[in-house]
Length: 429
Ligand code: PLP
Figure: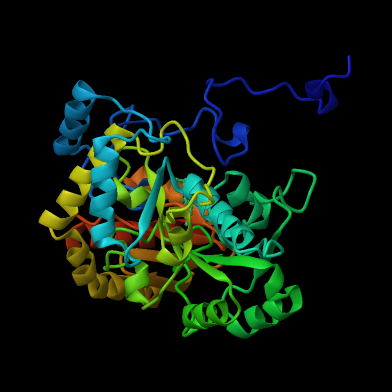
């Protein structure tokens, strides 16, 4: 009598069984692009339309789509062993090998590595480990995780709780699912210093930050911001967690952003670029300061109670090992580094010739194009799809530009030309 659909006087929209993520369902049902294929920098819809993937999916398809070597690596592993867990006395050879390979390219010297299934997972484990660290040190009041305004750290309970994009934190009846969190300024280190004083370093476990904010609108760090945050962390016994889920494995032209900005974080999260999406995999690099006490040869050595069935999944790990080989053999990180000046110049030129572009921001092959408020970035993306190109609207009426590392200069020019045209058409409509 009093059911939900009557209460709103609207019948529910029928649609496919799959619940669409991050959308008002009726807005997307019936107009979803069903992607059935991919090749290199292109994806193919169910209707056969070929689209240039100007975002590399959700910033993940760094080496391009549908490479047979990775299918082969997965096949070979599954024929031998799909996976075996890594709890207690068990491990599997591929998880072990992958961890060794990751240690070789680690942004943190002499790391231990925790593997899991994606970026949200990695954030969960990093925040838990930061709290566990201080608890073990006997400083259990250090619980609060600070994150920046507009931050995106995935959508598991911790990612939701530390979200800087307010709409991702809202609707759960509390300020955040994990109460011990607070937001800090996007780009003003002095404000961060004051926040730390107000909250009290004795209550703060860690500061977590994306080196370059992605979903928040592609925001490279303001001059000195990351360095000041790091100093603040060091002076106040606060752990620094760098979320390299987007930037890790070459997106900024260095293997990790940690290198590019000369940082020394305590924990680094990764996902996406570790496999370019060929298998769901993520994890964290842990610095010796944090892992050593858990490795002490003593009957009282503490345990970090974290893990999951698929942590160190053997097939995902085999894929990641092959993927790292491809990154290295094809010099793809260097390629991003070499493309950066061309990429930046092309974005600057778009801003110079199109009055509806308010600002462009970029680092490596990671770019954002902010439009005048009157010209909807979402509508521009729809027009771009009609022209055969994929972009995505981010916070602040910004268009995402993050092509696969294998993009050619010609493809980049064509992509930005289509963007330019779509912006003009939308502005004139
Ligand atoms: N952290 C950052 C910086 C991200 O951009 C994302 C995803 O876009 C995540 C974490 C969450 O990763 P996942 O979607 O693999 O859970």
